[in-house]
Image 1 (tube, rainbow, N blue to C red):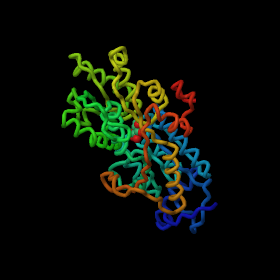
Image 2 (image 1 turned 135 degrees about the horizontal axis):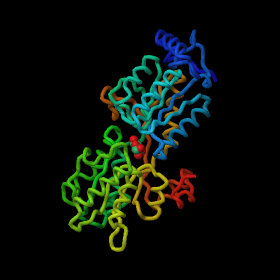
Image 3 (image 1 turned 135 degrees about the vertical axis):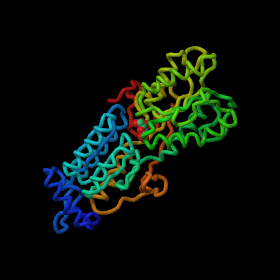
Length: 387
Ligand code: BGC
């Protein structure tokens, strides 16, 4: 089916310029910058190139995200350039630069540092290339057209609820549990250059702060600010080290940690390793309640084995699908439909967003949410390994 660039075509002069620039740069699979063909002729999907920039392959979710976006775009006929940046900011900047040079007609970007891509986005804007911010909001730039993500504040709320449920202060249905506490907890947050880290932490603290204030929850280390709790680049080893330091610092008097708020499964595994190395999980010394996010297979196994308490499942297949819906809209000359036009202010503008719902997974939910939905197989859950 031919596609007509009515929206992009309306800025004909810029489009012609972009077309000329792309031609000068050696072109590529795409026409360059979503530019309309001369005379507003239509373009087939196979003449259009989508650049997909993902942060890292060290976490399963981004590999799954990248693959799903690529597969779904290719199924719709588009050409796709998919790159992973190894959690290195200059690498991601270079990769995005290169996609623009190659003549990308649209960019889908999950940023490592949400503020580090401004000059690339300006170049995209100058070439009339729509930019979709994927899962992580790109900040401090007017040149972000759309944002697809999950309800990130709700992720934090759900993590805090799961912590309280694990401690017995709440039941799964939200009603009050039988436990009364007080309980010792510690707080972890994500990378401060990732806008999501703030949404997760703020969502969690909206639930936990009143209980900290009333003394039912005690953060024994006293480290309650996001800056103190943050783990740069979401690194598992850094989380393990911080947990070790907390144990040798705040818990060297024989007191026990009862729960840990962890925003991501990779961090949770580092935290659990530190706890186990300190003797937790042995006889008479239960492993604390540890939360998570992403339903990574190694953590799903830990949940199945009763070691990690919960995770938040975000079905990346659905996120990829939304990114593709938005991409098709732009490439077809229309605007994608947002379901949130208030929450995501990137410092320059409120970016129209499409938010997807999230699911809390405890051991009892693995079958229904992860296996029946074909996210993981029963064998993968049992082995803790994908594939
Ligand atoms: C994502 C999480 C992920 C984290 C670490 C966040 O931006 O929303 O799903 O756990 O990055 O990769």
